[in-house]
Image (tube, rainbow, N blue to C red; front, side, top):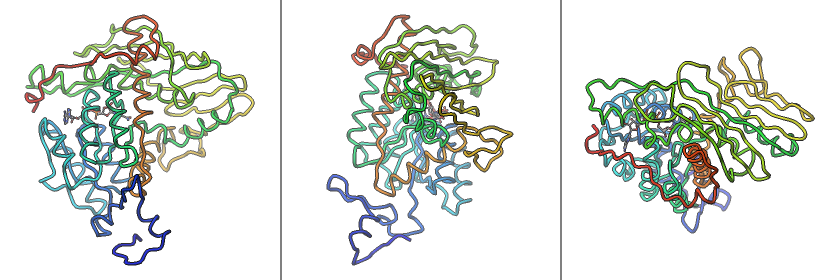
Length: 426
Ligand SMILES: NC(=O)c1ccc[n+]([C@@H]2O[C@H](COP(=O)([O-])OP(=O)(O)OC[C@H]3O[C@@H](n4cnc5c(N)ncnc54)[C@H](O)[C@@H]3O)[C@@H](O)[C@H]2O)c1
């Protein structure tokens, strides 16, 4: 039970109910609004697509948060999301989203950021917008959960880091790498950091994915179709290595506690049949400190099996860590996460499928909300930008076919600009 309107609080009660950061007293939402029934953290969703709906629904179900506002360019996205999320809100005994909190059009980002009905924004727009939207949300003083990638070019990553500095100690800023909260991965990485593999010599990471289908958007102009199918477009998505494969690159950075210092690679677009310009395969060698070479590969075309994984090889053992099952360490300190459909394992969630990522999103959502209610604010801008830059390093090396160092990459002023007129999108 939270304490409200108390005249006398001892120090322990005071610290338990609020946090002092940089001289500012941060109160829990329930204390600000003065009602226990309304004390749930209020989240506004910016970008009402597939991922936004998934994570927003998870915030309600897994973390007890309310969704109180929606923003998007397109009315159909807003309508469908309002219906779906209102059902989820009602199921938890929360009020539906008020009509005054539905924001549409190119300025919807500023309207939702300024809303007095939200404590935090879930930013799930296409990657090209992330630095700009992050800046707007932080400037408005709202906590933010930004989907990955935080940026698709170097200037964007620097802007995101600057927004992170502004938020530091005052706001929570999470980046959507939910795998870092998946219990089997957390345990694996804890063991790697504890020396279970000995001296790591080399490894591989891959993300082999079938094509991503999108709706037909019949009747829409060519410009609108291109925009709505942004995931096929290099200048809006950052290409598959930055938009999607970044998850396994992030796992490598996490496990190796470093970012790559150089990369060389190749890639091409020869088998995919969608209307965009993204590559359908990348093959990159990343060099990490200590001359650790990580061989990275990815695909995105029909029709082949899905598999995403990381393997590391060291003097004491090796590990493999797939998204679904098969997560283990071989060698001197053998360990098996016990994942899989047929076997009950230590990381089993309640559901019938016991994959490595089953609990990733719920844990990530709970940790973001808890960081706000506890006043122990998260700030993942630096690690988020580091992983974005690592993926950009691999992409740019593959585009040019030349060795690219981290140092040289950071000097890049190239901005990916899709030249989209948002006023024509509706
Ligand atoms: N963490 C994960 O596992 C994961 C999984 C899937 C997607 N994602 C990320 O989530 C983000 C969204 O992906 P998605 O699959 O939901 O895409 P989507 O196309 O389904 O949704 C994007 C939404 O943003 C809206 N939008 C576009 N530009 C906007 C603007 N300027 N202002 C307001 N709204 C705008 C679109 O109309 C759409 O409703 C991407 O960054 C993607 O990489 C993360």
